Amino acid sequence: MSEAVKTLIFVAVAAVTGVLAYVSHPAPATSSPEEEVNQSLFPEFIDPLQAQSMEIVRYDADRGQILRFEVAETDDGWVIVSKGGYPANATEHITNAANSLVDLKVLRVVSDLPKQHAEFGVVEPTDTVATSGDEGVGELVTIKGESDKMLANLIVGAADKDDPKLRYVRLPGRDRIYLVKLDPTVFSTNFSDWIESNLFEINPFDVGSLRFFNYNIQVVQRQIQVLPQMDATVGYDNEKNAWQLFGLKEPPANGATTLVDAKLPTGAVLNREKLDEIRNALRDVTIVDVNRKPDALADALRAGKGLEDLERDDYLTLFSNGFYPNVMPGETKPRLVGLNSELVIETIDAVRYRILFGITKLGGENKNENHQFIFVQTELVNEMIPPPTLQEVPKIKEGEGQDVEAQAVARENIMKQNDALMAAYHEKRNTALRKIFTLNERFADWYYVVKADDAAKIRLKRDQLVLGGQAPGAMPGGMGMFRLPTEQPGPAQPPATQPKPDESKPVEAKPEDTKPAESDMPEVKPEETKPAAEEPASESKPEEKPAEVKEPASEDASSPQEEPMKPDEKPATSEDSES
Image (cartoon, rainbow, N blue to C red; front, side):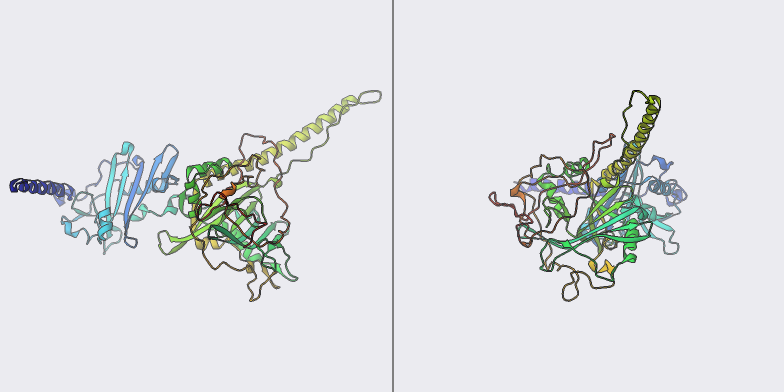
């Protein structure tokens, strides 16, 4: 290549670079400062109802990354696009945000110098900024209307030192800095501000019973090791205004992993104050973040089909969030369990909430705040709506001395009474089923994230259950519960093959009888002790549903494992394995 050709190439590259630099550089203002004072920055944005989407981009200096928050109006209503389409209560928020930019007037032109952008906090938040760690980065707010028409696009910077109600702002692509009156709090990126943040939507006075099933799970060398601590069920008696102990199971003295029946010692009473606190705290558990579940998993939960059709990646999301398909000690069928125990709530309207506590990790607006991942599903408490006892409808007796007409009237009255009882039964049952269907529609798609402190308020430790007396099964040293694990669970891997569904139909409001393939089950090895008798099943087999409302069922799945198992390896059951 000749020197002349090389020179021409260098000149061409330099020319292109210069053009790109010119095009990408913010343009100087074309009007004088005096002409823009008291003028609207967005003259075509005249109605807040024009807004159909809003995106807020900001730079998180602590994490060194760009954060994006976007809401948009869809056919199904407002959703948070940046959170996988989570439903948003955005109408009021978007109206307030749009109103703040409609007829936003320039109070003063501050500067036309690009070098002062950082000083007034109006540097545009871009990926380049995140890489270089520039200071003085503002918040970019973009509002669009129909067909993505740009209505407002503004970089919101620092507050004025003399009047905090005033803000320095800049239009992207322009150098000029303006001073306007603007409240930046309407551009919140706090997830909880845009949603119905009450996770459970439970009225504390509707709580009928609470079951605290405390255990710890370790995943070690392809084995799920479960360390049960306590299984306690308490119920609230509204007439007596008191809590009652319905059942208590604890580890036996020999340290086996299958819990056995236990009783409170003489003189011990339930800790009413603590139980009241837990019941009341249910309404204060607020959502701070969500992670979308894979579609196959969400569809299975929504339809009550169990987990037999899941793919390998679906299991990975369960494991990564702290939820494991497993056969628990003393049980014979696999079900989903949480890394950090579970809570079962039954309400007076016959709805059972099953809450699994998964992993905890740092995150959120405050990067040092502990967050708890939660899995929620609801089902019908069948025995709380038993079929009514109907009167036998007598046959009409004919013959001498028989008052056929009176018998017919009596028979008709009995039939009407029976019909009324059945109608009330069906209405109560279907009301509960409709509520469960609605709740599971909401819960099916998401892993919920709450503050770990809020989650701790609805959990009960063994030494918090009673007041007075020595805790049953107390171990030396005053622990009063089974030993805690010394290691944290390691990463688990999904089954090498898919579990095979059981052909039997599930019983309503109980985990489905889905049995995983033997080669997919991890080795769970509790003590070789005879399991105690299981609690009687609270669910009765449902009759044919009287309405078209589909009743959801709880989920089942095969067990996780850290590594794919070899084809000739068989799972150990809870009865013949050791911890």
